[in-house]
Length: 160
Image (cartoon, rainbow, N blue to C red; front, side, top):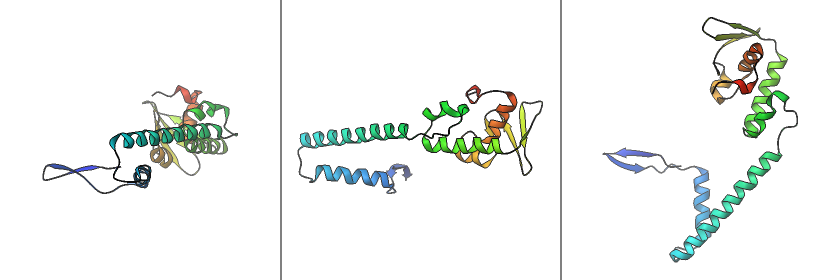
């Protein structure tokens, strides 16, 4: 999309666009097909374009709900409706990594946790971990899942 910036105190729009915006602009040009069009017809065509885009969104949402993973563990079943399929795949991979590896969890006096395995150690505080996955994606990582397992809590007991 457009990001504004100021030059000499006057707000400007730069000319950096993304492909989605360019595609939408091309669709608008295809719908109108000419620059000599009455405002009434233009509004009708824009409304019809909006209806088409809305139906595409509805269909893609329906498709996404149909294409769910079959091997989602019971602990993560409720997540499948709340996150996209891409995020769910990442979280499920983290879950299987947690189950595959041995982790040692230690708690200090300030409710911080140290999660160790043979290769590395990570700090977990509340719902945050300092691993690359958690900081990069902002999703639930295997270290947070280890802490939850240590505390005998489910994923949905996390504080918001």
